[in-house]
Amino acid sequence: MFKIGEFSKLTQVSIRMLRYYDENGLLIPEFIDKITGYRMYSSNQMEQLNRILFLKNLGFQVKEIKKMISSWDEASIKKELEIQKKEIELNIETENEKLRRICGYIEDLERQNMELNTQILIKSIPSYQVVSLRKIMPDYYSEGLLWKELCECTSGIASNECFSIYYDTDYREKDVDIEVCIIINEKYQVLNDKIVARQTKQVKKAACFMIYGPYENISIAYKEFAQWMEHHPEYKMAGENRQICHIGACNTNNPQEYVTELQISLE
Image 1: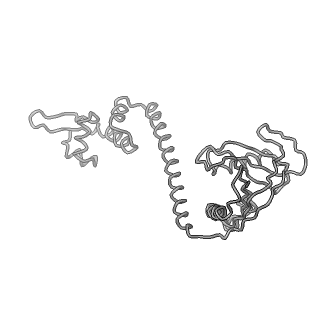
Image 2: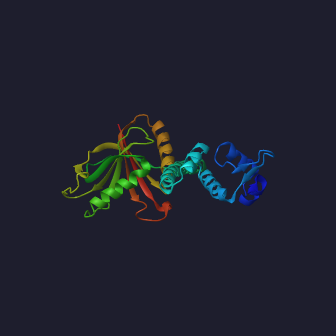
């Protein structure tokens, strides 16, 4: 049997924490001397203390630890750990999203005074025969998944011309309505019920401008387009926006070489 100070040295756990575990019923001394009041521990209690420390380091609360210690078996512990694992994974995903947003804000601050001298042209967009896939996506960053699904289902199409259509009239933080389209020159038999072969509508008037460099430059181009709109009150934005990736991640590993075209419907 060991006094609390001796047990503290052997286990490298402070006397304060040993008393705390005693008060909360997690690790009660094996014997308490009625005359001196000394708490006495045995070497057999080291295993239970290690279990307490293990669960504490994983983030379990005192009540949870007490419950798990009182009915310790591998099956129930594994179940609790799986629950904790899922919570941690969700927290990591949430924190990674925060980190991505912070990095984006830092880049935006660095780009605030940057100018692209965007050249805006007014032109009409003809009707195209396309095969397309339209879905409500979680966010704009999920567009790549839409392209992947369309390309996997239309691997036989030989076409380098493709574009995206954004149907929402405002910016959406989630549930974004996107259609990805591949232009075709002849009739195409759709083999997947998710894929549509259709004729896009003609856009009689659209503001079109090229963006050179990484996709982060798109926000700067929109700012310059907004300034252009203020100087041309005869135009108003109307309907859908389109985006054409002339040179992107599929063509080069260097974002500085990206070439993106935005087409904004006007009236």
